[in-house]
Length: 609
Image (cartoon, rainbow, N blue to C red; front, side, top):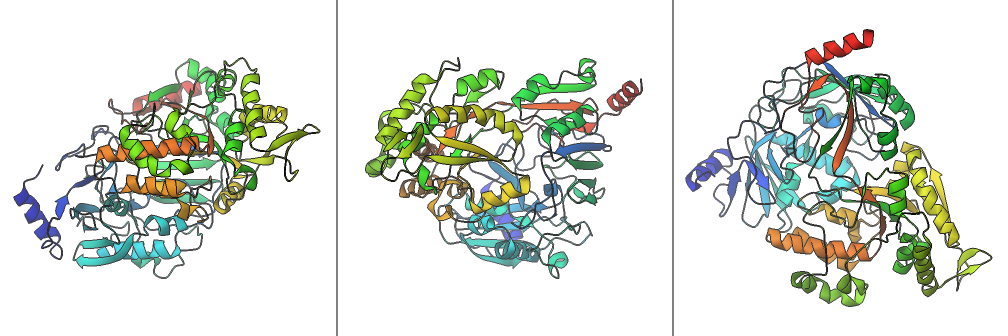
């Protein structure tokens, strides 16, 4: 750690307009879990090979998908993949310390003890691709433009910022409307920076295929709307020697081919039309990769273990719909999903049942509430199911033999207690006579084999459920507008949850366009617990509040939990090498991998034989 004298000198040098304020500390990294992994003065991340050769072309795929815009920050249009390689943020998180942010466009951050503001000093080397320096005016312009014309989620994400101002030749400061929110400085570190001179005469709010000006390691190359996109490495990239960048971004070209159908994309991979795939289908992983190239070693399949929180994936009830208002109805319907049979029969035993919104992390609740958790939950006892206080949450389980009678009997009992009865084989509401009927919206045909057996079980209960399969553009539009009954969705989580929880489960985001409050949650209980997380004074308080929130979300049955895996399942043509050390939270491709000339030549020779 730097001495107090060094910090004072650094503040006076970088932040003359704010250095006189009491309690402010200038740092090279911001961390929510204590000290950052990498000390000031570090030269590279552990998972990078600084001697990795540059060159080569790596081909990737998107399936199913399409695009009609190169602007990833607005609601209109469907943005192309890879735009994060063009634009950069003030700070960035490495793949082995995802709760911390280190200098990128900004080389230093200054934060007071009460976290009521943050100031950033820009790296004097930072340049746009046209050679123009990145200025504090660009930063303020970026903030104002994204707030005014970007996706509504940014308006929410940055809503606590009351002022963005230039405070020096290379310095910019953001002032917040509250103190004690430890995450706000990091949120501002994530601000994408846009070139003011490029956008000043353009309409930022409209989708466009004009090639944007950025500052990142790649620029947009050839574009075929809806079909393909390539990125070209910037050979004079200003940040190539930054600690976060050394030894990475090694390919001269990265391209994406778009496929409307996942199965066609898989066959294209096996035919050598692209290089790397992260497999999401357990069926395909178990049955589709035993082809000649793999047997002779030209194609590699690998399961790479990771430590990242796996969050929650599940069937999501849209509680805005009247049919899902009753928690007991939602709980009853959860008994119709036979995970054990599904895992054995359809997933080849590859998955673990998810029992927490913060699975695969210390933030997941377990057992009964602790004393500290009870102190947070007790004021809301009359608003919560009794099970929050008396039972450890366990998703319904079976023996996996495909006979789900016991759980369906439990479901039938709960539905009767909730005021539903069978009439002519159909489950109807005892008061209104309306049937219990809903639609499950899907974007991928691969999920039909998972949803189908659950629909069969629901049919036994008299519930009328059906599948609606739509294309990617229509799916995104319906999610934005919250026009669905049930979807399959996955909320990712970090090691340090914070303000994003409002976007997931906060009352103010229930009807906000672009929010990820897909379950339609509006509850003073979740709102209060989210605030406890955001304003936690230390790590122990944050963990306690997260455990409490987890219990409430689980026992309110907003989703039917599905499953997760603790590995990345990847398949790739044997043209590449990578560092011996892998990052804990990512597979590293294509960032820290490189084209291995020897392997590439051997592969080319094998293909010609």
